[in-house]
Image 1: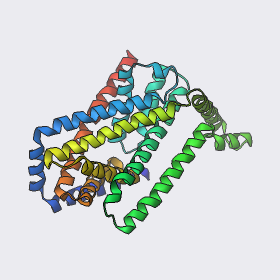
Image 2: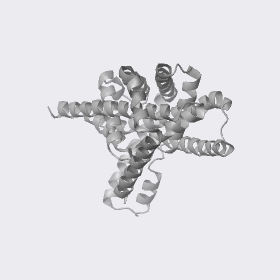
Image 3: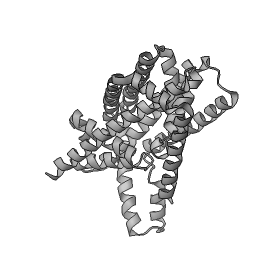
Image 4: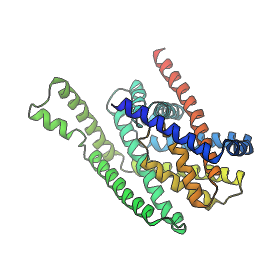
Length: 323
């Protein structure tokens, strides 16, 4: 069922992308990309700087001994996980499993799982707060339709509540509550009893992390915030190169586009949807549709490049372990 959903999502996304290119015009898109030209190279490389800051943020979510791993190795593990998330329709789950597995290969124990779980919360929570606060500063000066504003407010409340609940469950070590309840009442088989024991170990490790590293999550979110700021700088670079646009306009386009990304994270690969979101965001800010599509395509090329680097990193990490 899920495979059919993913295949349908990719097909619909590809159709949406084709419709956008047809509506805006392939020739116009090609002219814009040609104008960007070699400017695409710094644009792609800037994402590497963004990933460096996000890796620093992830490091603060790790317990010992994983926190003491060389930074280059953590960077490679993060790139490997991101590439798996990009090339497989697993809803940003497959890459997290890969990151946990690679951490586990270095040091066995539940700390590998907790590092991934806390890291996922830190990234999502910092992105959500950064977008909400940034939108309050930037987007209030932009006239959005009343229905769009209401939808953004309602979705923000829902996302914020779900992240707060996930944080409380982590901090109190309650991820395996339902499993332990079933085992206590002999409702689970031996296999689930084993799973319950492993999840209990993870819960204990989560509680221990928050007790031993009370500043870990806030520091992690701070570094992620710097990474998101670099993403805005990357958007400003594109706009300045193409139109001489201001940093304020770039921030508005980034905040609006990223907020919409938060609502469409489950769509496989984001094909078509990512480009449509940038067209909508750029048009709302006051730029042309073709500029938004050009930015979306540039983002796609950047993602393909770093996904390839991540796959190479994944292969190198696995080959090193086998040797």
